[in-house]
Length: 630
Ligand code: C2O
Image (cartoon, rainbow, N blue to C red; front, side):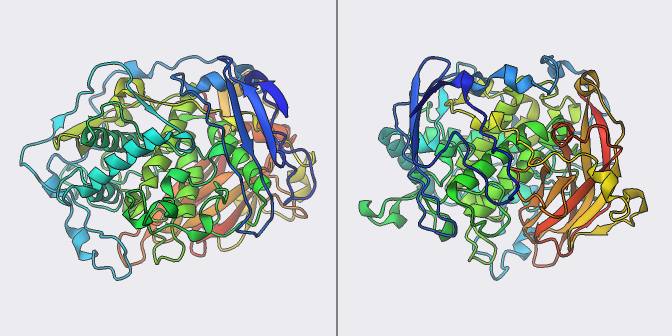
């Protein structure tokens, strides 16, 4: 049994090895080990985790019994981070960006959901009879009045709602949660607060029910809340009202929804609270029951937050290492600027369908999409519920999953790293959506009112963030990879785009600068951009991006230093016709290049490795740019 303080958590990075698929156990999680450690507040936390690792064995057990003497605390997650360590190699001290004071511009063009919700496109009805759809595609909310939505004003007051980690909830909490959810399910379907209507909100905003306000008489473009910087704020508001409605139904204004703590080993299985105990009566009568989940992924199977659509067959310990490494990349090393983290700019008049949506942020593309797909039932025609956007909201676990995604937004901003701040543009701050609140009142909400959780009256129970020190250790240090590949790998300027991704693609990409000094790196982050990714919106699509990978022993997972990140998309399932969509991704690679000793190389080798659904994917541009850190 090891004893250590949180300020001295050892790096969980796997040690150097030449084999790609056998990661050594991270020191944090040796087989059947139990740790005690102290938090900054000198509280003793204990947890026990035992990985009886057996690859390809569905019965392998992660005996994930956390000892429940953890008192919920109201402190931001960042207090668990050792900032000195985080700042190593990343850059200077945090300068708070003054984004809230930007001057409104007369030319701002924020995405604005329509005032009139009866305007919701009934066209979806035309495809509601899609034969194999388990849930309806007619997702418009009921129209209760003809008056325009009121501008929503956050109730004043202290933080009252503390969202607990799902794996640690008490029986008392669980009883409340179940009661609230049952009441929500019992509301008539045409009540906008009913579970069904709540589920359909997701489908309406994702599957093409709303059009933007008219722009210069041009045809009104669709609203899409994925694949761009609307992703975090839209879902934050969505959960806000879902939580307020549940609280109202049980008359408890302090009620808070749980978060699925999949970024921490103690939370890396489907939380027990979402799997009714058959010993306690017919599970189908339990409000948390959902029939559409992948039976292969029920507890104690460890979640794969880099899910490729098939079983990885990794041992439990290896899977945990991969997950922590993926979190580190998505939260720290590749999410070095607001666009990489939030997703691309998306403004009124932009056409996400025909012109292509901007680009997807690191968390949305990474753990968010992977967990969705991993939970959804692979035997259902559209991987309902969680595996497809149109049906995801029907699984109560959706809201716990998104609470953790939301928590990542808060943590990312709180890491104390320069450049980690919200978008400052009016086009983002003024973007707005329309929801029904807990009183069935139609309200309009703005991004600018959801940038921090405290004014919204909630926060997250603290959990450790063990991935925060997970900078991977390179397998080997082989400089000059690009120089040695010249002749075998084409330079990007000699490649004809669009490039097909039906097989692995490797290109040499020129860097904008070499041998950047520490000061240079504090001023700008080096970003690898994969633009104009065209994909089939009906498919689960994923490809991984590696830098300076070796031909003989290719890197395979996020736990390898060469891994820059992934591009992944859940099916949008808008119609039965094939629908091509366009997006893009970008990855900060400053740290990666340091790790691989490629700092003085003029070119790097970029590999795009298709994982699933990439048969008809094409990419129109690959480049590296310096993005100023402000
Ligand atoms: Cu709106 Cu998890 O997606």
